[in-house]
Image (cartoon, rainbow, N blue to C red):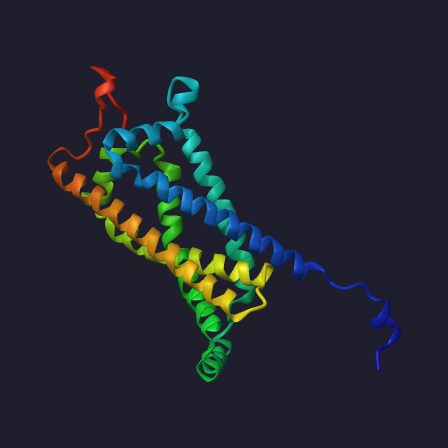
Length: 247
């Protein structure tokens, strides 16, 4: 039987609001990640294209000169968004070894594909706690160290290709699965075919961005390899004439 207090008590909307905020921050981060991947892949169109994109983020095309602090500000905003999302997501992670063991036993007994996808998100989420800040701190602290040669030298001569290869895999797995789970949570389909189609779309998106990211990373590595003897020299586009390029 319900007591009078239980009937009149207001429901606790805190968890629901936190869930909405977690979904919203996750969606914003996915949008950033995918846009970032396209901008990064400008190197596939040539050094001049990548140089143009890097200067765009420094505000040169709007203000007539570069302001690298704009890149630092954008990186800081993404880091704050990532931190908020991570704190909210930790609410649902196993809080102890016992809870983790119980979940593993449950996952093994049920063998539900979506439960396995949730576990994949947990694993990639923990990996991103370590990988993503390392990249963001570099962007925040060295905003003027981005460009065709600067980025390629960092990736090849600075051995950052290891970090970026790991980050490429984990971030796109996490993002792709996350979007699928958001779709199933906030726009659930009534038919089994809807779930199947969304999973096909999920894996198609993941494979696309992994291929695009791999092609971009290999291109940066190739440029860095060829430029290793002049590592530290900045790229100067042909349109710059005799002016010294910054990146």
